[in-house]
Length: 377
Image (cartoon, rainbow, N blue to C red; front, side, top):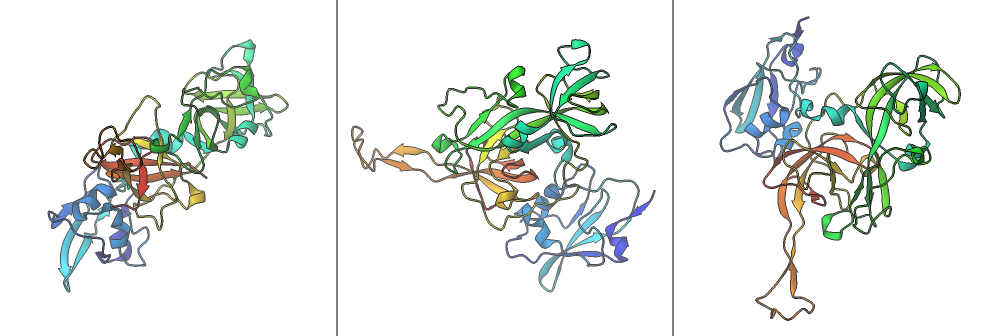
């Protein structure tokens, strides 16, 4: 099927006006750029602008154009100056089944875009759970029946099977390395106790075991099952799985639209109080860099939405001022807190009530748990 570019939909060139005061052109910007396969909106924006997240502010399209943000491989962007102001024009052309240029590399995020959810701990505890398997097997395997309790469903309905992976916590509204407040807990092996609780926290010897304000439980989707017979327990056929299903695994409705198909980098209107990086994709990591996913301790309840871009800052360390104080003087005022150091940028791509996932877009140094979020710079 042939589809037309956004320019042809309007029957004219699309003009992009660089009007925002903060949307400064890079000194080494190109005059012409041809969009290539594999490009992202962030990457293209960074070729022209010193602040790529201001792309939506410079995108001024004809109001009749449908989906004005979509550009495709082969499209040509031309930079010119009209009445002293810079303008970008998009040369229209006919497109075949090319994929539109995404805001960020979605293929790098597929695990988190489709297979992770964060829910309130009470919600997780009340979800229907797997309590047994066909022929008294110890684990569930594809093509065999599983038995689920507390499931309200009809034959033919399909459900996602989920397993808790992390518990997000913070203390007194704070989370971060500088106050020892972030706690990420992992589930232990599933056993009968998981029928009463959807996870068992792993003790990390940090003095915060099981304490703190609960921001939610991260759930990983590990399989799909279809209802064969209703009851308590209900009988379901295990259709697919990425690992063996165990007693205590929970069931949730399948999410047909797990993430927004289109979203674009932009600055938030304001920063929620004490917003920080709280976790990584793996507890094995001590730090992460560009194109890796982090969890943030802010969500939709804080006004967070997909596409919001933040600067990440490492909290300044407390070091002794040996010039003003003798080395043996440990009184008040000897230690000075250094300024926070810029680390990089993170863009939110999936949000939940109190937790969000973001992709590290660029960086000067590794990102650590507890790093602070500020307005993008």
